[in-house]
Every structure is written in structure tokens, then in C-alpha cells.
Length: 131
Image (cartoon, rainbow, N blue to C red; front, side, top):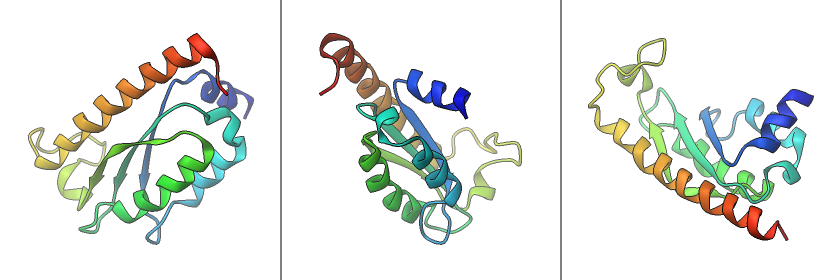
């Protein structure tokens, strides 16, 4: 757990990839992130990628995860990537079945926003520290 705590401390942002679990957050994500508490995540942005075998693409889980991440202090960027019918989009090893699939286009927006906020927050932490 010490190695994980160190990685969390060193990160400038977090990309949370999770399935939907009973229309909400998986216990594994909430338990692991909650274990370390908000001080490790504070003033660092997060991005959300969810997936599901349902037509909702894990969006219900993402909506439940947003206030949890906010409470930890790693505010989520506005864009999300929610992959519905995940078995139709990805192979078992995670590679896309079709690199031009329309749902994959969501990733660019999430990653672009996350990178922008990560750089901005890192610069501000370096310049002024955190409140």
C-alpha cells in the first residue's frame, strides 16, 4: 500500500477507468481510493472512462462517481467517455475492434481536458502551493 500511496502522491492527475456496478460505483474503486483519503488527491484533476454491457455505457456509474471524486478533491473534468455494449467495441484484450468506432472519439475530449487541467494545476501548485 505504501507504493500505491507514493504513486498517488506523485501523479498530476487521475484517469479512472471503471465498469458500472449496480448502477453505481464499484466497491473496488471506492474502497481503494477512499482508503488513501482526500489529501493525496487534492488539487489534482480526474477524468472518467466507464463501460458496460448495457446501452448506458456505465454513465450511471460515472454520474455516481463524480461527487465521490469531488469529495476527494480530484475534481473531474466535464467530458466523460462512456462505452456502451463494450463487447461490440473492444476485443477481450482491450484493443478496439474498429479504430474508427464513433464511441472511441469520446476519449480525445476527456484526455485533452485532463491534460490541460493537469498542467494548469501542476503549475499553480508549483507557483503557490495549495491552500
